[in-house]
Image 1 (cartoon, rainbow, N blue to C red):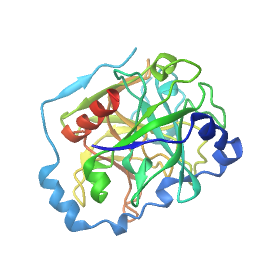
Image 2: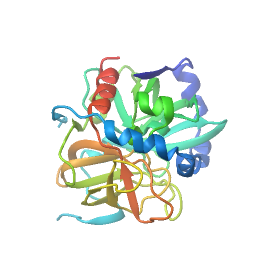
Image 3: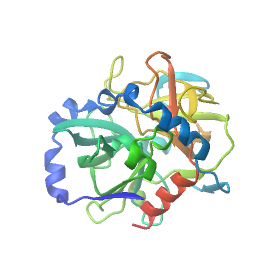
Image 4: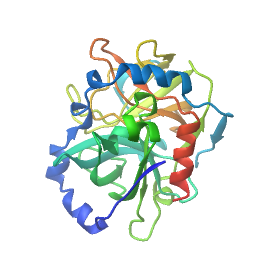
Length: 290
């Protein structure tokens, strides 16, 4: 498991992220070049996307379906567990999305692999802002003490395993899950189910100020990856946002089974997210016991 131990102090990281830097943060997708992916490597990995026994970890405590990219007005748990991720990449402020999941240490945020490490370097000044709302941080800013990703993403940036995690430090003596709650997470689930996905897209026509969602049936990518796919118009900045099975709009709760990963430039209007198999499960277990 690829793990990055953060050495900067919490105070230094939180001081770095001024409101101005958050507004200037560039969606990480602007740095990610899907055209540079080694197609032969990706196709080779399609044969060994890890499988295992189905596992689901329960969460802590009128349908808008389907939709391809609307602000979320439903309330519920997701407005607290989902949030924006900010970090420094290549010397510049950048952003993604993430979500809190149930964990033993009550401190785990799940996101995309390229939202913790890209082009051979781990991102620095990494923080999670749950419930981010137009520049406001209603539940505080949580600095990472560890960031992790799958071996396949760490070694060769395999899009089939574009999954990341962060373990955040306590804030004012409290643990993240105790403050905002947590969603369930599941692995090795059946494909082609109805799902909901959330994120904070920050590229046109969005500006990163609000939680956006898509919902609808999913299918399996038939081009370069083995990912889930859904009709969705979210743009850069939404990477790392959660995909939910069994999402209940009344409570804003579901079971996370993927993250926003990428979209093909030649196939607009679709979002793709990696399948949560045994490698994702190993990543989650490493994070929740760190």
